[in-house]
Image (cartoon, rainbow, N blue to C red; front, side, top):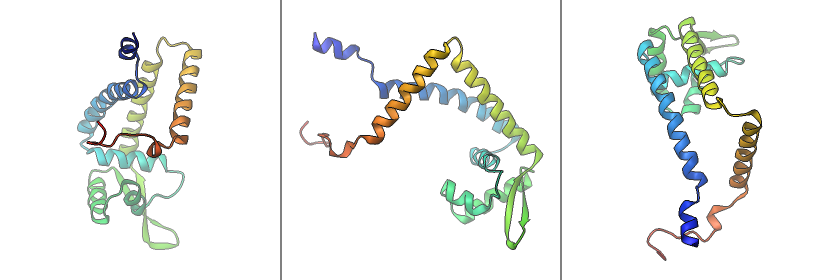
Length: 166
């Protein structure tokens, strides 16, 4: 009886991973289509998103290097190509002629707005036919699980190491 019950128990990690995969496949599908239409790589798309999300303050090449953990030479090459594709412009930064502020072109902003529109559509589809009180409960439970993970020290538990005690 105990074994039968355990086999039917749904595991949170498995369900979250499955849901993540399902959502990820849909997002990747339309991202790939948009990237192909615009002629950009996934990294260029991430950079557009980063510059857009941080547009309230100046964004520099070094910010991208740090955020995406890429080498200076890699960032330089990507940004040069993005300039050629009319996705970004580098503008001198007042007070320091060595620094060039990165700004999106109208073409890149149009792309980003398309991405954001698709995320809005996805959000609508995910919430479809789910009453608000159930969504509120879902987010409360998600927050509780996150809190449990943050306060739990998994390193000190009785975890069986590979090849030992199995």
